[in-house]
Image (cartoon, rainbow, N blue to C red; front, side):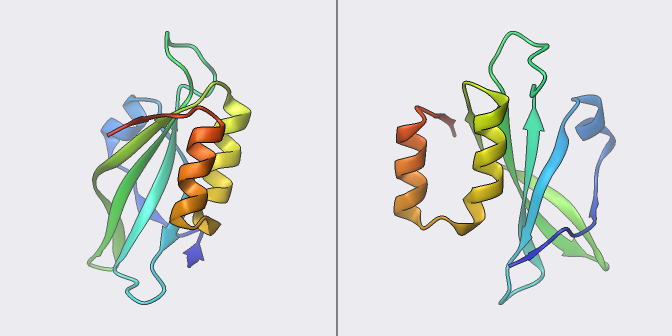
Length: 108
């Protein structure tokens, strides 16, 4: 999986104070990928830090956000950052165990 790609970030993304944490592109089909974004990592809002997951697609040579796939809420910024860095190497089982272990609240 290729990391650190350029994604065309829409204005609403910036206005919502979201920040790109990580991007992953499918090795077998480089036209699709996933973007992980931080929400409320500085805890200035009345909810816990959130990692938002978006599907991205290559469109005319540039990756663009398609839609939000899921969001995961964490007790701390450190837990959220660790999750966003490690999630690309998880198997499905490891992902479920990590979510349970850290008592992550999945918002689908």
